[in-house]
Image (cartoon, rainbow, N blue to C red; front, side):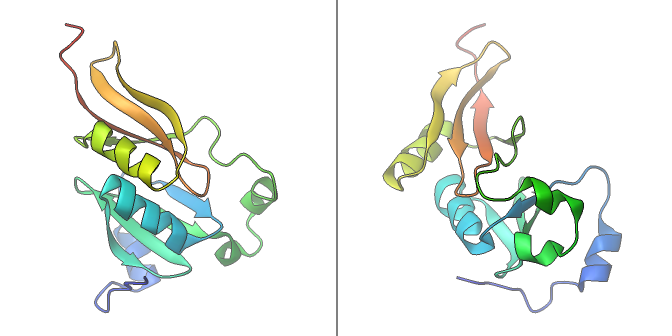
Length: 146
């Protein structure tokens, strides 16, 4: 499952290249989360191994780090057994067919927090829960409520 890219920059080079706003999700199993992203959401990864991954959608990158890679980071105290990871966080993926994503999630046995619906803010979307407990919201522009 690992697809660590040989020409991916070193950690310091990659870190120095980041700009704007970044998202990093701590997960108990990087490769399980990557499988969900690929199979359900059709997201690709620039690189992935058991400790680290860089998913990309519509040119936007974010990071996944295995809990074990964080050693003494203070966030580890919040991610223990039974912890609610990502409470209040929605990872929104625009221009991604929510019906297809929801169908793949259901077929894969993943939780659908909220099924596809047209929302008053102009999007058609659903809420899907990843193996690590994060909520991903694939959506497309909706014109039904105009």
